[in-house]
Image (cartoon, rainbow, N blue to C red; front, top):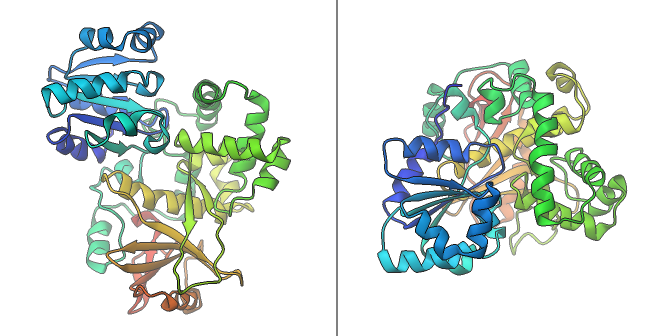
Length: 407
């Protein structure tokens, strides 16, 4: 298996010089440990995983002895299993002030991981690693996605053009390192194992009362609604659970880094907006497995092709920020008249509206809706249609056409 270089490596090396604790979070099997062990090569840093039940028991029952046995610099894998360690890591850090003393990984999202914020506030650099991005698969450098012509031209030079079929092959296959690297050639078998081995186990760590079959029905119902506004009642009905359970289980999927939300853009001058978030998966391969598409060809011509394409584009744009150690300010726009803009990117006081379409020939009618943002106090800048057109182009001076393969 050849190692696929991760964009986050540069950020890890940078923050290791500045912070005593570096925490890399992200779902199972996205390559957190592989990346950090690659960066450890040739150094004195030790390694221990709390997937080892003996090590976990010691970390929970006697964290002081655990840290005596595993002295920094050290990589502690799956640290969420022993939150008792955080207070002792804090004491070590405050005593020694050693940059990069602790590398930690966790299969739960930091802001939802109990105990870290209170114990390590100001001492920890928190990074998120997702499944592979288009740029990483292509071996290209990555910058956060922006709608600026100079940046787009630079991005184009580092990517390989692929057609619509190639995009849907990539969507169907998914972006987990084991699949992309060829270790697992059958994505359907991989995702079946992934659900039963990792997600189910971690779900039970967070809530041991969950019935496995009901949870599978639940996550399938969620996948069928990717790219849609969250409707707790419909998800609960399809999964045969109550709405409180559905809400709690969505929280678990978010905690494990399986799903994320786009929140509606809001502004005091825009009164007639919806307030419900839209739901997306980080990995479209898991969506395709759960919604039972048999091939990329059937997906491309199927009823969900637009929703899954939107999910793919939104997730890829989000990855370009997270993999550079930055937080994306991404929203969507929808008003009470059901007028919607797929993505609103906000940066430096500017809004960039983006539409996502399967078409290869977008017209001016797709960008008329962007004028709705003119009512916002923040100035509206360049807009874009991300679509299947093979080449970078423009609808007019203010609106670009960006191929999906360029994200």
